[in-house]
Image 1: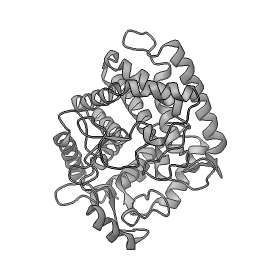
Image 2: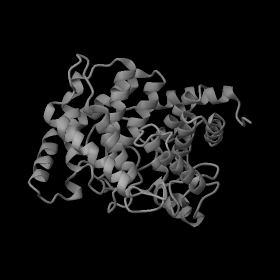
Image 3: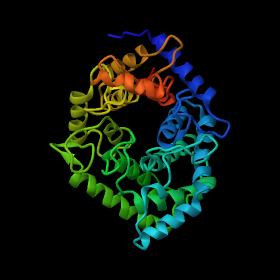
Amino acid sequence: MPTVARSDLRMLVESSLTLIEAHQHSSGAYPASPNYPVYQYSWLRDGAFIADAMSRAGRVDSADRFLRWCAAVIDARAGQISDLVARAGRGEEIRADEMLPTRYTLDGGDGDEPWWNFQLDGYGTWLWVLMAHTARHGRQLDAYRPAIASTVDYLNAFGERPCYDWWEEHAEHQHVATLGAVLAGLRAVVHAPDEHGEPLLDAGRTRAATTSIDALEALIASRGTADGHLTKWLGGTAVDGSLLACLTPFEVVDPHGPLAERTYEQVRDDLLRGGVYRYLGDTFYGGGEWLILTAWLGWHEARTGRPDEALRRLDWIAAQATPDGHLPEQVSGSTQYPEYIAEWTERWGPVATPLLWSHAMFVTLALEVGL
């Protein structure tokens, strides 16, 4: 049975959209959180999913502005990308700190404080969201061509390389959620036409991207599964909440097929309490329940014929809102390691609230269940 009135859920959807728009920078970037000390940056991954929610909700200009910001960030680094790709082609060793960062200042700079920066998933995610948004709203792609080409080159050259995962951890591994995001981005553009009906990529990039897609699919199938489910990283056995993106919306595997079903079941059984943990063993603020992942679970449930479960996730997320209607990054009702809460609070303050990505994923799930 519903625990939150439908009218209250709709109000939270509208206030979430308003909040996201209010905090979008004049450049188009979305800060991860406007008042959390180390989240006043824009991540391509987080921001792309925020833009996707805005696009789905009809806030087209907001999504346009963020996607143009992404293109500008990448265009400004076209020379760096070309150099990195050329060096990789010559077999040179390239350090992780030479790669593109995962987050940028709101005006598009690299930032000057240390971070766990080398992550690839955001570059695939922005491609996937760009293609979905332009198809949804009939937007033109001409202005994005250089950034698309640079991103495809970058992912073709480095898409299989170990890097930090969504949570800025375990840079020594190849993470299945990261490989899935790269795969989804390349799939979205490889055979896509532009608005004139011409191929978006030239023949050489199309061939290279097709080769990359085949390699990524084979890699995930051969080393990214265990006991019939996707795994946190290649060669592992555990699951991670980020794997849900490989089912919905990326469809790295058939979302209705047995591999997806077994992955869903394993994530639900291992990581779901009231909300969803990132992974077992997480100690960040004690390892609580994350709102974005709970929404993701509901999104997949809505897409696979489980509307009652999806509504339960929506209700749970709404119940975590502060009196001001702000959604946090995680909550501590069933924290795995409560003794770590004080350590992180002393380091960076209370849990990030509001987290714009939490609001965006709530909106996405609300739209998916037809609220």
